[in-house]
Amino acid sequence: MSGQGQSTFDRDYDVVVLGSGAAGFAAAATAACRGLKVLILEKTEHFGGTSAISGGAAWIYGSDQARAAGVQDSPEAVRTYLRKIIGDGYNAELVDAFIERGHEALRWLEANTELRYALRPLSPDYYPDEDGATDYGRALEMVEYDGRRLGARFKDLKMPPPGMLLFGGMMVNRVDIQHFLSFKYSPKSLWHCIKLMARYGLDRLSHHRGTRLTTGNALIARLATTAFAKGAELWLNSEAESLLVENGAVTGVLVRREGRHERVRARGGVVCAMGGFAAGAIAAANRPNTGTPHLTMSPPTNTGDALRLGEAVDAASGAGLPSNFFWAPVSELVRPNGERERFPHLVTDRAKPGVIAVNQAGRRFVNESNSYHHFVEAMFASGSTPCWLICDAEAMNRYGLGLARPKPVDNSALIEAGYLYRAESPEALARTIGVDPQGLRQTLERFNADAREGVDRQFAKGGNSYNRYMGDPDHKPNPCLAPLTKAPFYAIRIHTGDLGSARGLVTNGNANVLDRSGKPIPGLYAAGNDMNSMMNGTYPGPGITIGPGLTFGWIAATHIAERLATAH
Image 1: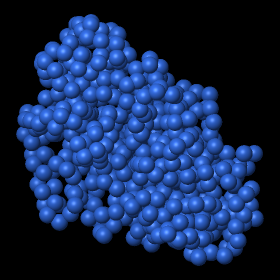
Image 2: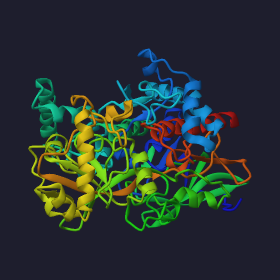
Image 3: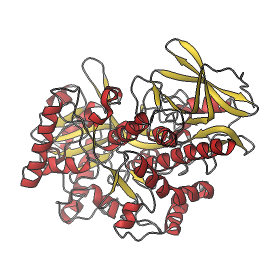
């Protein structure tokens, strides 16, 4: 093992956590609550990482929330489902650790930190017709949080991009979005929206944005509030340059901070949770080459530091994954001043009635209401890179499309910026975006005929419980299907994209990183996207990155605490 270090240190801690996303903060909060001295290093000027702009959902078997709701599930059902989806890369040790300890981790975190999850009333696995799948009981939704609890640190919490906010700074979750879509028809929804806007208006009198936090922002804020209260330190704009090693064990980190280097001791160990490599120079070589732009949602600083640090100490990294990334279709707005804003098409538009995806030939190539990961897989497989999301005026007015908002919002600025395209007929739209007009016309004739009957004979849009969950529950008979007939017609260019990388450092069930011979490297741990995905680059359900991230972050800190206690 290389990277041998001297035994002199500038700072002394029990645990050093590299990265400030969900996995990192789960480890930090756990260690701090167990009485350990904790340092969190974050490369950027804000904490939270990709987790802070995520949906915040966690996929975990056997939670107390599920048991309280009477959910019928079993470890063997989860194993059966994951074996089918993961395939040859199924790692029994990691899956068993996740099944057996995931609900324990969540229970501990909810008992000892501010973390709070609620069971989603309905949230099917992404392949709901496979053996072992369930429509209910594994997906947990983050409970909203008051950002003011962070105190002075609130300003340092990573803010979601503008396209994920309303009115420039108001966070909304899935329930809120449905209320905003329904406020014209439902007094209950109208009252919900009025309360949200009133709270937001008051917040802006004294804060740079709304303090009512939802989804991933609430997740990070909850864990961070506890970690800080228990004494964990956070260094922003600080980068781990190398691991320090003594007698074959990782005992610290060489940190570059404020223009100087500091040798930081980690008596119990170092936890890598820096978000993977999706924004790094190595990313392109790890994904299919389409010759067209690929857009990641990872922060620019997610460049694969864990792989670099790990290589120097002979750490093993994943190989042969079906996918090295968690895929998502992404559109991009280029503002007049040159700023770019990316929008991941996860839940708001693809599955809705009156929306289809077509390639340059004007042909559909996928069930638009399948998961975002599956959607991009179909883009790659069919050569539909990039593709176009298309809708009619009815769908635009009711649901919006990408960054374009539903009626009564004026989306003309998006048209002027070249993000949203509009035309009075499908043929005119096709010519505008460079799609074959005849192909699009024939596609719409076929799709519209099926949509009127509520059955998509070509790709079965709305054909399973997950599809229907993503559609409009008030639209009958198929919540995902409506003909595109009302002018004007709209389109947005969609690129392949990702939510982060899946290939990472190989670990055992204790989140302890393994060397190339398969032996644990003492003092080195990985969680989140720095850990080689236990899902092996597949995407079985909502929250399959954060659920394991929280679990193995907690396991890593627990293992460190137990080792330190034994050493005394």
